[in-house]
Length: 257
Ligand code: COA
Image (tube, rainbow, N blue to C red):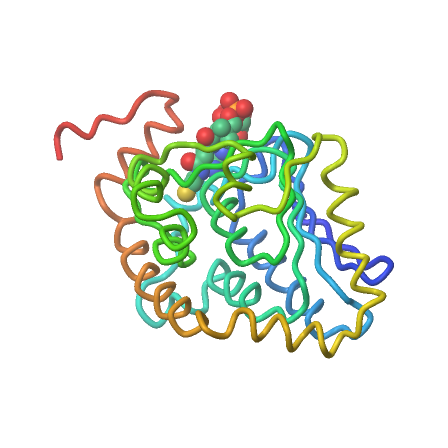
């Protein structure tokens, strides 16, 4: 199992642990993360959730081999796919979710942060959403939320060109709370999560719901629209060329499209 979970001192920790593949997320890992989030939401002993990775890598995003061999379904099947279950569980988690971005956060590694409540980033991390470079489109409501955060012009750099950005920029854009030395980021995030042990859980839950409520319908609708296009793009010749190029360790050639 490449997802480690534990509940300790009021904090449910979800640790992505597949360092040999740069923490790329497989169908089974999405499933495990979704289950852990649902369990944490239901467990009265849990006051906050911590999502973390490995030293030097948070996650390199969706497993590209899975994209090729087991793409999420289209149409009505899509909602049942593990990646959608994970997205929905994160959206529906009514407890504070704290992310410790221990290193590179690519693709869903960055877009999941849009749905966390507190984000602490290692000073060695890089963030990127290279969906278009892979022949894909933005996901997880990033096409809605990223322009809201940083304005269209900067969002276009990140979402159309796929330009990476620094932890300092993530803070400047309002995507993250703070940059921390690599060796301190997990402990700092855990301390923030543990502060909820001293706060009234009902008020925390309602306040979090209120903070998210104005955007909730738009976020869900955008995820649905993006998801349909994303699933279709996964089957496109452009995406196939990008995925094959990744595994052949060469530059993709889009000149023929
Ligand atoms: N899916 C599947 N395998 C992946 C992966 C992914 N998203 N990311 C990394 N891996 C694998 C590599 O294929 C390689 O496997 P190998 O040892 O069998 O050849 C191994 O993990 C190490 O990756 P490598 O690229 O050699 O590490 P690096 O330190 O040079 O670079 C990254 C790290 C994260 C910058 C780079 O791996 C990367 O860009 N990954 C893809 C990111 C991406 O496009 N994600 C999808 C977003 S939608």
